[in-house]
Length: 571
Ligand code: COA
Ligand code: AMP
Image 1 (cartoon, helix red, strand yellow):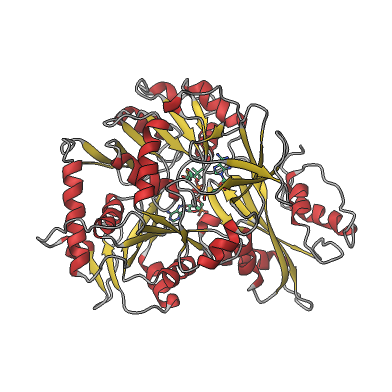
Image 2: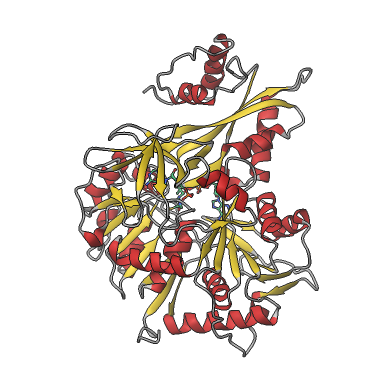
């Protein structure tokens, strides 16, 4: 702003679900952030305190995040699609001084009350005294708890805007929880200095942006993409960022993205392949694209999950712009592998995220830690040190940080992904090596879902695996074995299990298929053959493992899956 950007639009809030468009100049945004920061200080928040932000995609979310950053408080944004228990787990771990939330979120036409979830989460978390700030949306007003809650307007009602509080480059800026292999989320800690250096560098070099241009990350501020590319990177680089409260389809139609691009003159869009698969399904010939002037639009970036070549080629053909698949994780905060627009685009190989980005020394190791030759699939690791911007630790959990990422191959960071580097040095990400699945670009732990299923009183054993889904890439499917003596109707239990996962983890888990089976297929040593069940559900070829204790159980699994319409296709 001090370099003359005060009147430039910093943030455009575009909300098809409320029919509102609001623009904020850098000056207005700075003033609101400073006022909010003043309110935080008045309410007792200080440098190093945690502030949990459980909000929908509204400007106040961004203001709250930046206000924390301004005074050195550590924000921890929790995605709105998580249920009370997940929120509680994050509150318990972060021990915030304050929680900022809103009365409701809006999912296309459904109003989702946030306040009951928040109240339940606070009760479950059993933390110390807290101040809650609630942004009241007129679609649904929340009742406030006296002595604990204040409204957003009360927070902002002060004439003492806060100045920036100096921080060390290595002080934590935020904690962002992500799925691990168990039900306990991992709090990725990001620092201040390295983070801004990396993100600012990425804007021109990876995304080919210039200050003053319009960048749109169609994600959610609850995810890392939202942190990095809705909030910090575009604003640090002097771009205009778009905060979009809508979906790629249904708000109101599959032309939603093209409307936003045309209306605001977007230069570069970043989203997840799943958003494009949803558009492709509803508008396969791209008829909606033709209705809009996309002349300013020059590139599309996709990340968050594996991008199938069909989707990439469809987007490229219909939009007539380069489409870049790039690979990263919550832990890294920015791309590990990408086609770097600002350094000169390399030929695109659909299915590959192109090459490692400068700063990342990517290697492929076998299970013994030996480096593999080109084109052989192995564990993808990054040789230490990690570049700026990557996680510095896990909140409250230095031990797990070491065990999860650093202990397996000394001298390397374990990404958790499997893949290979081809003879041209291109990187191919083929899938996870752990129990994490990717549903609609969201990272989910099958282990966490298994913990929920196992808590049902009638369940003796269970296994959750991901199956291929046309739009969401992968969705979870749960197999359960009932306790001896349970004689209830299995379909009733299946419905209860679906409800339970929705209640405990949240709708975002997209857990819609539970199947009661007589037994789970296992090796003789008792390991559940989740991979084989996945292959049966996907209709891909599978070998009966030599170590299976009873091969006939696979036929039973096949029959049970058939009753639910799986496999959808045979491949
Ligand atoms: N608050 C409450 N509920 C939410 C929510 C939120 N913030 N976000 C999603 N949900 C709910 C949805 O309403 C849906 O509920 P339902 O089971 O009752 O229908 C459920 O969680 C699953 O949501 P989602 O997986 O998003 O499916 P969808 O059918 O609503 O939308 C897509 C499908 C493909 C359009 C959508 O997933 C999409 O655009 N994804 C982009 C992914 C993305 O931004 N990834 C971030 C990394 S780049
Ligand atoms: P998240 O931390 O939610 O961003 O999820 C990170 C995980 O998503 C990675 O470890 C990969 O498994 C997967 N992922 C992200 N981007 C890509 C991509 N471009 N190609 C393949 N997998 C991806």
